[in-house]
Amino acid sequence: MAAGSVREINDLITLNLDIRQFAQDVIERCEGPDLLRAFWKSIESVTVLDPTRGSGAFLFAALEILEPLYATCLDRMEAFVADRERSSGKTDDNPKGFRDVLKKIEAHPNTRYFILKSIILNNLFGVDIMEEAVEICKLRLFLKLAAQVDPDMKADNLGVEPLPDIDFNIRAGNTLVGYATYVEVEASAKGDWIRQQELEQIKPRAADLQQAFDAFRVRQVQGDGSVPTEDKAELQKRLRALETELNSQLAKSFSVKIDQAKAFQSWLKSHQPFHWFIEFHGIMQDGGFDVIVGNPPYLELREVDYRPKNFKSLDGIAVHAMCIERSIQLMKPSSTMSMILPLSLPSTQRMRCIQDMLESKRNAWYANFAWRPAKLFDAVNRALTIFIVTPSERGRTSATGYQKWTSDNREGLVSRMNYVDVPRERSLFWVPKLGNSIERSILRKITSVNTNVSHFVSKTNNRIYYRTTGGLYWKVFTNFPPAFNVNGVSGSSSRETHFSTSRREHVEPLVGILSSSLFWWWYTISSNLRDLNPMDIQAFPVPQDALNSAEIKIASERYLQELAANSTMLVRQQKSTGRTETQSFKIQRCKPTIDQIDRLLGPLYGLDENEIDFVVNYDLKFRLGANGEETDE
Image 1 (cartoon, rainbow, N blue to C red):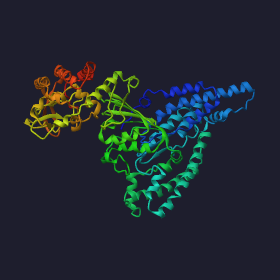
Image 2 (image 1 turned 90 degrees about the vertical axis):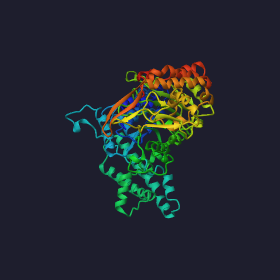
Image 3 (image 1 turned 120 degrees about the vertical axis):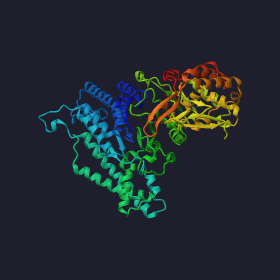
Image 4 (image 1 turned 45 degrees about the horizontal axis):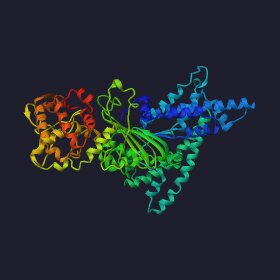
C-alpha cells in the first residue's frame, strides 16, 4: 500500500483535532515548574508505534508533531532557569532538574539535533516484515538528523557526531506471528509442567535485557551517540537466545518439528516470528504503547506466505483486520489509536468483530473518504476510512458521511468534515456513514419499516437484472437483460446477474424503487461501495404499500422506457475475448422520473419535505458530473 506524504498523513491522523497546538499553548503559559516537568516527563516517555511501518511515513508525521512540543518545553525550561538566576543571583540553581536537561543539549551539534535524536530514540517504534523497508526507514531518520548539522571540513567525521543506533526501535519481523504478551507464552505451555518451568526463566531474562536496552538508549541521548560495538553485540546475542527459545515453543503450535532443521528454517523464513513482549519488554510490561498509528497492508490471507493463529478476526481472512486486533493487544487501556483502512472496516460483515473490539470501552470516530473524483492517495484506487479510538468507559461512536471532493478543493478537506453520532448498539453490521442530522433522521425512519426487499424475493421467473460491479454514481436495475455481444454473438456479461420477485406485478415497482435516489443513499451509507452484493439489495427496507402503489408502478414503467430509449452500445476491444458490446445507459436523462419516484416514496417512509428534498438532491453535484452514465469503472 503506497502512502502519501508526511504532510498529508499528518493532516489526516490529527483529523483537525489540533491537540498539538493546544498542548503548546498550555506549555507556553504554564507558570509553575511542576506542571512543566510533568509535561516534559510525559512527552519524553510517550511511545508511538507503527506496527506495519513500511518506509516510516507515519513515524515521520509523529516526529513532526512531537518536535514543537519538545522545543516549547525546552524554551520554558530556559526561561525558568533564567528567572531563577535573576531572582537568586545564583548560577547553579537547578529547578526541577531543568539545568540537567538543558546541559544534555551541549553534547550535541545544536538544539534541534538533540530534539530529533531524543524523539527518534525515546518515542518512535516500528515493525515491518520487509527488511528492506526497515533499512529505508532507518536511513530516512538518519538523513533527517544529518541534515541538522553544517559539515565542518576540518573536523573529524565532518563534525557530525556518530548517528544513534536505532536497531532496537525499528525492527524487522511479522507483526501477526509471535507472542504479544507473556500471558500468551504461559498459555502455550499449558499442561506441560517441564516447559512451564523452563519458561519461568524467560521473564526475568527479558527484564534484564530491557535494563541493558534502556542503558544503551540513555548513553546515546546523553552523550555524543557513540556506544561500544561490543555492547550492542552482547545485546543482540542475548536477544537472539530468547528469540530462539520462543521460536521453538511457537513452532509447536504450527505443527512444525524443530528437530527437522529444513522444515523449521523454512517456517522461520516464511513466518518471521516477532515476540513483542521481549522485543519491547519495558513498554509491554508498562501496559503497552501509548499511541498506535498506521496503514496496514490491504491484503487477504491468500496473498501472504503465512497464516497467523489465535485471532478472533481470522475467519475474515483480512490481514489488515488482524493488524488492528494485534494493535489492540499492544495498547494500554489509556492509549489512542488511528489507522487508515479500506472502507470495508465500517461497512462489511466480516469487520463487525473488529468494530466491536475498537468500540469496547472507547470512543470511536470513523471518517469515510471516496476515491472518485479525487482520492486520498494517488496510488490507491479504493475508498478509505480513517478511524480514531480514545479511552472511555461509556463510549460513543461517530462517523462522517461518504466524502467526495475534487483535486481543486482538497485543501481543507479535513476541517470540513462533520461527525454525526451513530448508534453504538447496532442490529446491522455496518456503521452508517452519516454527514448530518437529516441523514440520521432519514435512517431512523427507513429502518423502522418492518419489511425489506428479501420479503418479496423468491425463486421464480420474475427477474430483475443488475450489474454487480461498475456504477460509481448510479446503480442500474432493469426488467430485461441488458444487451451484450462478444465478437457479434449475443451473450451475457459475467458482471450481470439477477434476482426474482415472488409476484410478477412487483417487478416494475421494485425496479423503480431500487433505481431511486433513496436506494442510492442507502447503498452509500451502508456498503463498502465496491460491489453491489445481494445483501446490499435485500436488506433495503421497502414498505408493502410502495410495491402496491399504482403511481409508483406507472412512474417505474416510464423510467424503464426512458432507460431503454437512452442507451447505447459501448464497444471495447478486449485482449482475451475480442470485441465486446455492452448496453450502457445515460441515466441523467431519466433523472426527472427518478425524482418523481423519490417524491412518491418519501411519504410512505414517513419522510418530511426537507428530507425528501435532501434525498432528491443527494450527491447530485457528482452524479450529474458523471454525465449521467452507468460506468464500468
